[in-house]
Image: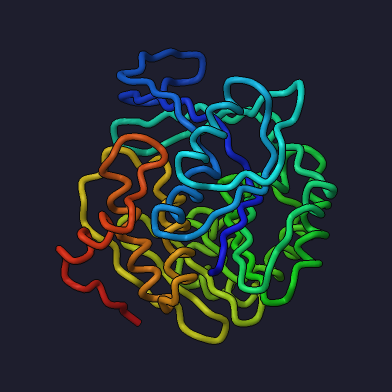
Length: 314
């Protein structure tokens, strides 16, 4: 069975709901506050709930945040590959969710930013595995070069999933080019695609990114409620429409989409059916409060069965 090996970061999310972000120097009161595992946990939970075997290859700390992360991973049946780092805790992220369900992040890096070459050398990747990496790994700390080298040494049949994240503009262009060249599934939103390519139209950005990826690879460009574009080099991008729902919290929606897409692809779905399932998972996720709100396989099946087939528009 194909596995998802996640080399990103699990952190603690402090989520605060506000009517609107305060102006510089201002203040506002949160209408609700919650603390939960976040970051890479959201992608892994989404994939695991869709029936995929998931392994966490990132680092984690000793302290309350690390304890929370490990407990949450165990609760989803996700295997942790490395022991906790001593004398440092896992980091955290403050997520502000406004009345329009838009989210803004401020992150503090902890033990999860210390994944090095020795850790990676202990990870056994098999042909057919999906290896997930995130842009945060290439802008925080000094471990990015270790991860780039390791990706280049992976078995040819291992598939790299890359989510450049909102920090993509801070990744060294040379590093970004190397990572994209080894990427089999590039999952990103329209804003991030524009930052990478300088192109405003999502269709043009998706086509350009498909040319930069590994031959035969896929680009999945998430375009909010519109759905997502699926692109392969040499082909016109295909829009897979989304589902109309009332969003209450978009935090973690992209992660739910990525995890569900990879799980569907690993289970034998073609890219367009995988995108439809991913759109459904993201639609369910935004109707729930919290970061890790992806549906399980039964919930997703029921959601899709209650709606007309989305199809795809060329």
